[in-house]
Image (tube, rainbow, N blue to C red; front, top):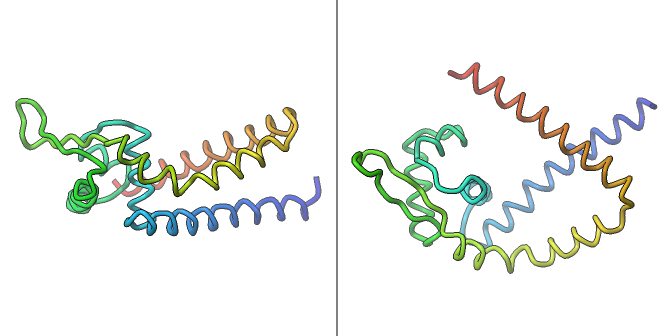
Length: 153
C-alpha cells in the first residue's frame, strides 16, 4: 500500500468529519438548535430515556450545562423531564421521538435519499470494506474517547 494513498484516505476521513460537523450545524440551525445541541439530541434518541447524570457522563457536559440543554429541548417539546420515583433529585429525560422526527425528517430527506443512492452505487464487496472501515474507525474513536475521559477523572 502506498504512503500517498494512505495519506489521501486519512485526509478524506478528516474532511468527512469536518464537513459532517458543518452539515449538522446547518441542519441544527434550521431546527432552531445549535449543531452541538442537535447531536446531543441524537444521543438521547439513540440511547432512549436516561438520567440527567447519564447524559452528563455521555456528553462530558457539567450537570449545570445538561440542565440548560434539557431546558432548551423541553421548551421545544423535544424531550420530557420527569422525576425519579421516590427520589425527586433524579431527573429522567425522555425523548419525544414523534416531535423530533417531525422536526428533523424534512431537513434530512434529501440527504438521506442521496446517501442511499450513493450507498446503492457500491457493490456488496465494496460495502463490506466500507462497513469494516467505519466499524474499526468507530472502535478507535471510542477507545480514544475513553482514554481521555479516564485521564479527566
